[in-house]
Amino acid sequence: MKLQIYLAGPDVFLENARLVGEQKQAMCRDFGFEGLFPLDNDEDVGTDPAKIFRANCALMRRADLGMFNLSPFRGPSADAGTVFELGFMFSSGKPVYGYSGAQAKYWDRVTMGHDAHLDLHGQRRDREGYAIENFDLFDNLMIARAIEDSGGAFEAINEPRVASLAAFQAFIACLNVVKERAVRSAI
Amino acid sequence: MKLQIYLAGPDVFLENARLVGEQKQAMCRDFGFEGLFPLDNDEDVGTDPAKIFRANCALMRRADLGMFNLSPFRGPSADAGTVFELGFMFSSGKPVYGYSGAQAKYWDRVTMGHDAHLDLHGQRRDREGYAIENFDLFDNLMIARAIEDSGGAFEAINEPRVASLAAFQAFIACLNVVKERAVRSAI
Image 1 (cartoon, rainbow over the protein chains, first blue to last red):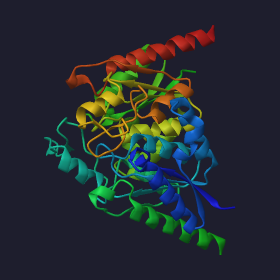
Image 2: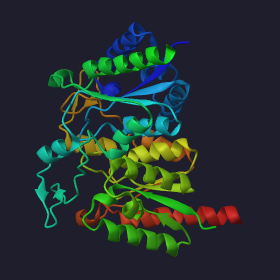
Image 3: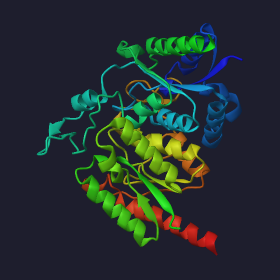
Image 4: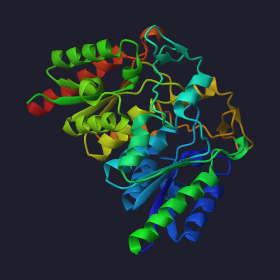
């Protein structure tokens, strides 16, 4: 049986979403895996959000592991739908892998974009006064630690802005890690 | 046994996080519930992200249901850590409730803040060219549909900017829904 990998990410919002999905699935095949992409459900579910939701959950239940595109989306954190799915698959006890087209740490991203300052206690805060968490991680600690505790891995490789959301290079790096581990556990 | 409610949200990043947590826990008590707040773990876990993560997961496993502060945080979507936890608790089969201090739909929030435009196919896109999902929901469909499918509810009440992140009014509205349902199911 081929390892089935759920391909989560904001890729579905790209203008060439279907092509990006097909490319990632082809890459999965090159590694001997099967990639499950949310838009594969499209014909069955149409535009009914309840059906889309349930079809995505069914794909996640079918998958052996999840590979999550955690590139920042409309803010310093990953796409909300993707993060929901990360929590869903982690809670099911499956390994969750993350990858991103942006290498900067969360602290640096928020500090750069949100007029950070130090408060009287030396805590760094954004322009709204919200504390900026500083664990030297790429995003909120729940995301980073779930990947670690699940036995997954996280790969980030900076890509040119125009290509950054799909994060193909980091995606391939992540597939490499899964492949190495699959080979090692089969020996 | 009192109903135990996990209190998830970006409240932990507020300058008065501990006070906000205590106030929400007091409100839970007024309704006959027990509120579990992440900062309750603080003394045991210190600042080790692995310990914080596991302590939060343990609180979620202990809780009967989750109440999620989904007020927009550093962008048009809810806080990433909160959304992770929503996926975690939904996947465990527990009811998840959401509340927010901002009533606007996701579509409107992104359209206002991200230089939206129509592409040649009539799809609305943000300044990066990413499609803006339009399901008349308050955030990404995975979040909204999980709440619905879990048997939970979502309450949003606009609050003055200075008080909006804690979203106390919507929180109380949400407690009211849980209370009504608890009473009805006990009859």
